[in-house]
Image 1 (cartoon, rainbow, N blue to C red):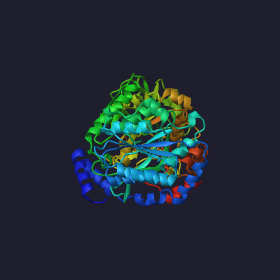
Image 2: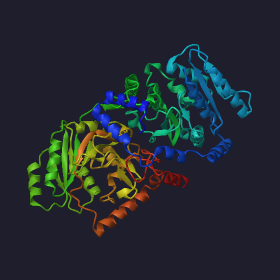
Image 3: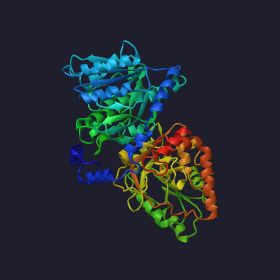
Length: 619
């Protein structure tokens, strides 16, 4: 981390806002060396001059050539920033654009610079009318009003949003237009698009802090405005939702994005860095605490979003600037069936049940699926604990995790199932209400938890498909081994979001969803059955929610033993092949809830090797 006046000021603000403990954690994270330095990575990955020329040639041949209006509100914009912003649009490889500048500056200091670039643009296109449109406003109407004035100037099919102190990459408009042009039929044409982004210093000498985003992720959006830049919306969608609202100044972009996602028919994510967000003293890119009022406005925007959708929930600000927690109200108190497979692990099972007994939710049953226990003490323990609320059912065949859970579910009476390993110890008394309040949501099928090893390092904080390591490229738990108090990449480990899968060591699922998906795949007796189940649930239209407010210790597969015999190794290889065959397309394309630019070896949001990514993209 570079030490300069700006970073020192940011550090003091962070210390004041978050306190010493969080400051020290953040400082430690900043000082860690990147496995792949981002600035070097970006220089290798950005579009080459040859690629830009090819984009220009290709786009001229398209049948559909959407016009994109880039709207920019100006207000006392430093000349250097203004020049770099305009030049970045003018350098676009895609040519069917217009730049709409609405200037609320009290004087006429910016008009000469704009006119200079208008002349350059006419010389470049050979046309009398410049693609750069400028309007001097009679008065400054603030960020919202000035943006709306720029929108009113636009006549494009799509409107793109750019801040006056930021820049876009030369391929930004092409990449957006390519996604639009590729749509076949009304339902396939996106009406809302966003890209990945990074930050740059005031002099644009260094690129840093990349934000690689997932495809549309509802729960992440309700935790934080992860979409931000580069945002492009269709004229039709813009007319539906209206413009930018000054009621939410400071978080007007969050309010606008939330209104757009409520109405959008198709949302596309362009997984490329197309936007450079400039870090300087007055920008929100400067970090936590720079504009505290913005966090309050964001909370109100999120509350309004939930109200419009008729969702009974409350919103809480958190210690992290711009991050929120949505607390969904528990709508009913249905019977919850907790399914726990077990073989001879009395001590672990007793600890597991002891934690369950502390729950503040009382309408539940526990079904212990006994599987070939050999110790007399195990059966004595069963007699001791059996009651109207705790039942033991007997599965006599050899261990098959999928069959054990399907067998347990067949004996369950609840409308919601909790699948739980016998080596789980839940840590909150309200864990069941927390899971249930999410799982009751119409769009949600499965809810997973944040799990720890006994040494207070993370064992599971969501699961990513296509990551290598011990699971041979099928999937891996995120953040394994990271200290419990850390929040991970852009606080992803600490906030609710959607993943493609979560572990069944502790998972809640709707009964109807379990049945629709056909239960667990019994061909997968040990490995990947939870991954496969989650993917099938996603395929029938439900979300998988990772909820970090549900925490537990996981003492890790004590009942089963190691994968070290020839028989077990052969079985594991067969399960790998099963997953590769069933989910071949997904494994090749990459996890939509992650990002193709992350490592496929490490499951921690670290950057992937640029050469490997480029090779993969060429396939």
